[in-house]
Image (cartoon, rainbow, N blue to C red; front, side, top):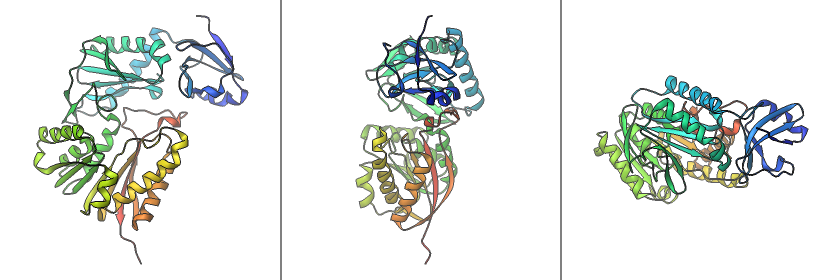
Length: 381
């Protein structure tokens, strides 16, 4: 295949040589590329091959140097990804991430397993056209699923075998969860928080727990499995909380669980009950860099309100999935929250994604999820 070659500014040579998988649109010279075209990029002595996309800030997603990846190359990358999951996925678990895009050297593609079905999603139309067919073929051959579907704005589109049913039950560490693959968040569940849910399970024994932005009650069920005395789940979505109640019931925890339909920012100021453990897992609060400062203010306000609901010695388990907010910036927002709440805090645990969401050291942008556990103490003096 004869490739178009674009020469970038020499200043981009270190990034290209490091293996960073993105090239932004404002770094490209004039060209006639179309979505889905393969292109060779050269900066100084470094070069890489990638797929062009006419939409979005990321213009080219890079797949390495040398040549356009063949079907065998893509299958080899899929095989590497599957081998990692065989080593890292916990027992009694049949819902997890199989392919994590850039982290698995397949930029722009994610694939999740839900029992006998796979759901894939792309973040680039170019990648969907040029790369996804090879990835789907490799997954089908390696795993023989009942079906593989593409999740897009229209819902699920069949790519291999049959479409999954409107909902199915999957397992995480032996716990059972209803997954809606057609209309649920992400590809059905928030698989990236699995290890953090397990941390909550370890902390919840005997605790009264408040789970904010609860969605389908993932953190709530884990807290109950860990021996929580009571869990209250709060979310704006009545449908999501119905699933939370179903999840609590099918795991045998219904009598210790309560669901409240409410806006968290409105619920907290008028709620005066105290808890031993409060969980805060909001949706992304910024989509662009320009919204970063607003997001940090929102995190400070939200976590200050949550800290006020904790007993002395209680724990705040708080998360941010806002990619524009770095781990250090999130810690600064939590420090501001503690100042506003008039309490002292200690970080006792800090983490990110579950291990089936691997990160590449040359791609810090890949770490979007931050998870921090704070111990809360009264002020001295």
